[in-house]
Image 1 (cartoon, one colour):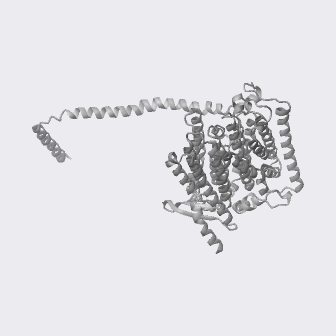
Image 2 (cartoon, rainbow, N blue to C red):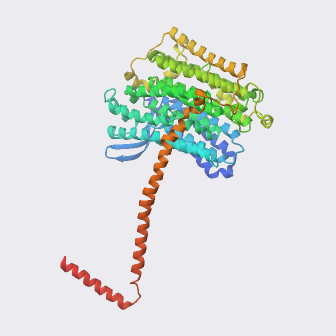
Length: 640
């Protein structure tokens, strides 16, 4: 009874949680020209209210309970009733705190970063709308409501990536993101159609109950999960649908932080975690998810080694880290995958916002080959960026160490070949991240005198979010301490009720001994330190600094050109489609459709001109025509 009353008291705040960012969107969009820079604070305040409500729900949701209720019936026919409902459980609460917490810091940061931009109020209206749709996605109690948020964040990503729409290249990047996400969304839709047809509903409770009545590995379950995974591949940038994410760097840097850390790209991970029972019942799909994640992780990490745009390096890092999360999900380690989502959100948001602070200091320049020696000019940015770099490299005791170690331990226990590949990917990550760090903050300054004169630390609206994120990037890993430290894994224990239903299909988890755990942590730490040492030797000791006009050959050239994947897609997909569209334009549009339209217009015009000749204005002629008409009608009446 107490639990029931407690849950009832949470319905109103849960219902209002997503409405504040939506209200912020309307206020800043409609009245932005009057509010001017106050719009940034209003938009930030709306996200702060949502974060406060999320925190209230987190602190007051009782035990293992979940708040699941329908706001209204949406689509109803026959025995099918599709409602618009909300689900607040431990999984959605974790995501709500991440989305609103980091989203709020990004909003505050944006006040300083976008201060002089002419589209200041429009930018904040888009940010609020982005957060609103992400909250809808996370709070949904059905795949249909989730799909609304899913499509909404896709729309907002298009608006934000192409925010500076006067630049055609940025518009192309926005269109690329939108179109590639639509490919994945088609898979999501196909999965929903199958669920609706065979299960009679789309809410999670109905789908899970109907699926569990089927045998393990059933073809229908495999088909549904594969289609859903296609959607996740598009949204979370996995091979082969990843190329939109590096191009998304065209948007303002706070957008990059929002997309890469707290919102859009985590949607695919969240969707699979939410569908954990379906995936646990489809071992074949789990294998596919695992291997796609592994391939994406190591492929993107290799590309990251030769990128020179500070944001592009971080973009490929995101793709690689997302691959690591998918690999964890594919091995059935749902808690580990979500743990890395959370730690990654802190240090990746910090890295992007730190990169924005660097770009701000450099007057807009993003090429790390023209940087160097910035540590003494922007000390707060340097220190916080170092913490984030150590975290993503998996150095103890920063957040990334614990979440990465957990995934690698799962891989070692169940798929040693996956452990080897992911360990290599982690080593490469440590190398290219410290390559980025050393080339940006160490050595001597390689920019122009004008840029050197412009160097300065960012305002407090930018450095305060950096400092807060740095704290969490340093300590968030302690929420998931491995058993070898004799501590409770608070994160896994908190999420245990959400994933309890899938455990019966996954079998017993492989628990590593303490000795094995120490060995794995030691190997991972030594590997990361070796990678950092190599980066230090190359770029600090030997000063092998990349030149702007440096010629690369062989494999290095392939890596620098991202294995020519964009060129390949352009050759085998884009150009053939353009040729086909040109042919259809000539054969279908011009020769058939235009001909039909022109012929119709000519016939109508000819008919009108001809009939006009009989309109003489002579009353006698009209009477004569009426009599003739009546005689014709009488003739047909007699004959037929």
